[in-house]
Image (cartoon, rainbow over all chains, first blue to last red; front, side, top):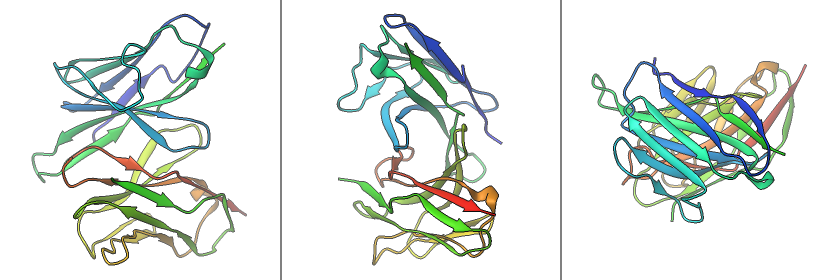
Length: 119
Length: 113
């Protein structure tokens, strides 16, 4: 089945540094990638939607310059948290979408998530 | 706008008890409805889905029926196991978006032996 590999699974960094999280679709081409943020014991908040080769569309309230999203290929999307601060500590989850040719259904597969802790 | 409301947790049950987690939604037309499960330390996994009214999604003993008249998609299981302990998210995809998922707040289920 469709698998999304997300790396790193956890990262600790100092305040002011930048952190990059990668999301790869291993056996399918993800035409669309979604990035979510999850606070402890809360639901997932959609941060942005990216389509391969174009700029990401950010949800209201999400800082574009803070959370840089690149979707350079159909198998790779990256989220870079720039100048991270403790309030950016969270669980970040990506998901990849594609249309299954045999069924015509839209399929969405989630990565395992990346836990970021900013000291 | 589109939104999903689910019952607050945590829900604590004994093994083999009956489970219901309520979910209602607000959306235009006929969204697709989903239940996702998140086990500790892991990402989300699709549990079941329904794409039109009166459809019943089922998987691993869990069921949910798409009720248009009550705008609900309640999750049920006849006999829970300790391994079912997780956080369950109800979600919808609006009619005008094939992929964009809108999640409920999640309900934590704890099953005791």
